[in-house]
Image (cartoon, rainbow, N blue to C red):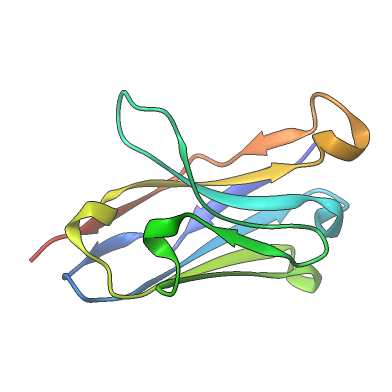
Length: 120
């Protein structure tokens, strides 16, 4: 069982930056593929960025060159640095941990999310 807790969201002006954190409890954090998703009310979650257990990263096209995902396995924490934020980034950002590919169904976990609001 893994519990995920996001932090770092808030209100930021257009052009500003935020750094999200996702802290994980439980064991084997380093073995999980981790990701950040965004979700608007009534809409499906969308992948923003992901980092594999080996450190390979992928990004959604709109955030390439502006967002950076990283992880610190010693601290059981994942991060997302978000720069040059615009109003279209306003959403709830959720943390995901996934080991289904290696250990099977049931090994996927979600955090509750943190609100990011970009507004002047």
